[in-house]
Length: 319
Image 1: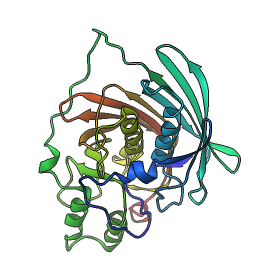
Image 2 (image 1 turned 90 degrees about the horizontal axis):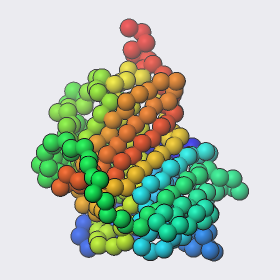
Image 3 (image 1 turned 180 degrees about the horizontal axis):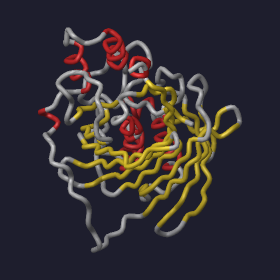
């Protein structure tokens, strides 16, 4: 099982972020960079580590897709992947990615990937690739109407605004400082942030503008899909907790993660991430996500289920 960040974990002291522009994104130069050891065998060394000291699930998904993309013809593009997290990952050791060529067809090819630590799989995935094909059968949902990212505060600026509230309780202030200490290689702008930090039930839905930090540029579309796989898992499962403010999260991990890629996109350009949780129960929760390009094109659809174990907040249990 891989850790779902939930948007509230702190990996440690903050490193200085490089300025945006022509500098290559850390996501492709480090976090998603793999070393080829043999035919269809790769090693990942650079990990983004939440405070829980588990590997971040989005990074494992992204690295697995990098490995699979190396095992298909250049003209093949990923259209779907289906993953299971089976064991907790250890960020202190490298991860081996073994790719099996399950099927190679004229139009579709399937690759199976196992991520391995200590001789055992921690993650298994199947990715399907397709040659581009035109079809008159086309339709999609409509992108939600939201303010553009230029009119919104970043996640860091929203937190800073909360911290300026003199009435903010000290325990929440410490919590927000932990979030603020993150060094996440993703830029995030919440669409509807509250004016002040408050614990109250919300609908299990959130809208975020997201993009990779740094410059990736015009490159193989598979690279942008790998980055989107990383981005898609950040704060995703946490959507299911929005209506349940009265509980403290004891344990939250991803069980499985699926993605479908519909249209070309740039992961270093702003995309709207529409997340919602239609169901939770039995210590599990289901979340669905859609990544929209700014021009209203639906680029990616995501679905994830995870384990969420909670306990009543002490102050509320006495009421």
